[in-house]
Length: 300
Image (cartoon, rainbow, N blue to C red; front, side, top):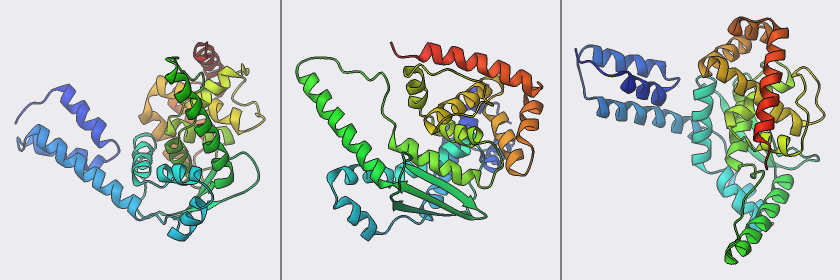
């Protein structure tokens, strides 16, 4: 049999992620001395992408009439919908979920709609059984896109004057919103605290803008068990917890915790078992790490 390096094995693991069956096929091929490394990696990666594309293609997106009704309200709606309803954003979202949470069930039926409601939230996501639903708050998103367009115009004028433009707190990415809400679909009826669900969704989306905003406002990093005032604090605080856990035990451990909690396990006991620490020690260590992280990330 041929022998391959640890680096090559890591490449395969990164590409295949949660596709365990494909990874086992790869191992069997090379244990038996069959195939070419680069060609095999390319083939299985293509197969994985094809599977994810099929999952996304099965989603029920807003009708052409609904999209036209919103884009007729102004160019800001077309700009944001071109991104948020684009196939690439949803394929990326499924990939990030599978890398960090486990396989996205092909039998889940996901419906996306465009709506409007009071409040500051820009979207919602949920799942009951095999039925998932995502809604985007177009009123709030339209306001946000108009603000972003004004910032773009200002930045362009500054660059014309050869002046440098930097963001202390970068804008929230539309792709991140898509991933965040689709993560809630993957979470389904998982019984866990608000900070757990929102923190995991923000961590999966990977948008550290929430943490930078938290740091910029000079908010105190309280114990993870302290009830927070709103989602603008809960998102970054929960994300910090999952970043800390990833640093301590890696993504695979987080996937294990989530799979157990989603199956009905006690979230607190799962954390204690994974970290081999009491919950009190976990709360103390995580708060100290998160406070230090926020201090270091505070924009200058």
